[in-house]
Length: 241
Length: 197
Picture 1: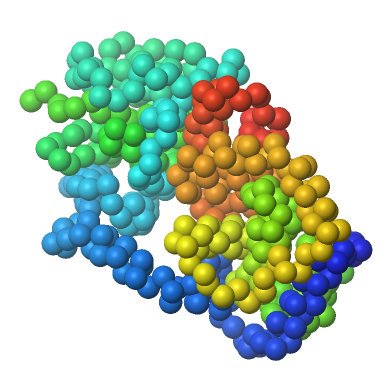
Picture 2: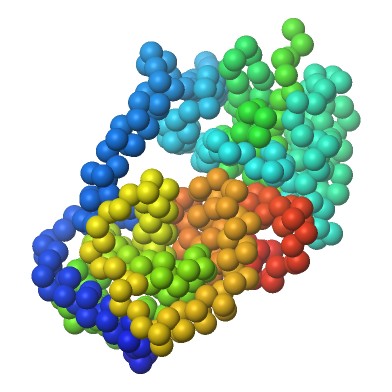
């Protein structure tokens, strides 16, 4: 990186300490070389032991969250090729991510427990710097026609165009004007059901994201066909039966 | 030309390899730390922690996954997170090397200069504190530490496409947050406008 620099007294003293550390406790010549960045550290074991009480209670809380062995999600495939993701609880994001990967879906699942100040708005500010639109936050009235998909692309008219009704082309590459809808999201009782129909572009390598809004709704988005375009799949409440 | 610390796990066994590695990286590590904490004593401790963590996890470095500095930032993030956890739990774990004991007035002044220089970065660091851990890590590495998106994705073990999407999302949130708090505009480098995998 840099050419050897002149060290100040702190830097020299630290170097001396580090050299001594390595000389006194050299690592074995052969160590497993995994790609993982995170590895237990010798020093941190001290902290881990001291923290046992804390760690145990954390595990207990987690255990309660997953009690009864009931899975947090299910990923099924129907006979006609639709992929159906059922989220029972906002838990085990990594497991769901892996289950989707097993179906060939490149997904990013992240249940953010803290939410963020602007809720589920992941609309990208356009060149004009349009920021998030708080008035659009979840919990609002169901779409007038019960349509489950709202496009949240980056275009100037983004955010309020439902999937149904006259197709206005597909400027943002969300695929909403195609005959096969990319995905639908329904709330059924306590479950969220995301259906990705056979033939959907989402089954064709589109990047899919699953997360939560501040008010605890599931939010789903996917990469549009055009670069830097992301499209939301939003459900408002129960579907009309 | 091969660096004296190639392969990197030599720094965990050979003091000379470690010294070469240290001299090449001591400045970037101290700046990395200065972007995150404002107390010079904590900064000194963390600098020691980051290098110790680098020694401990040197075997995890895989050159095919990016440059050494990207890996080092990943190690540094974990070391700083561990420090935060320690403080949160008020644990008094024994440090192998207590950086602050090595300080003298001259070194202290140099650290304070670095801290001053990174004040703006720390403001952004606070603004992004409300993102989820994964989003925050990514935005930090790209916006604060200047890694490419591809390298940051490798550090965090996510796909570049994932990183790209997360960055867009995070950027929108942080921008909103900064507007809310009436903070002045950040320099361009702080929030990348164009993100390429």
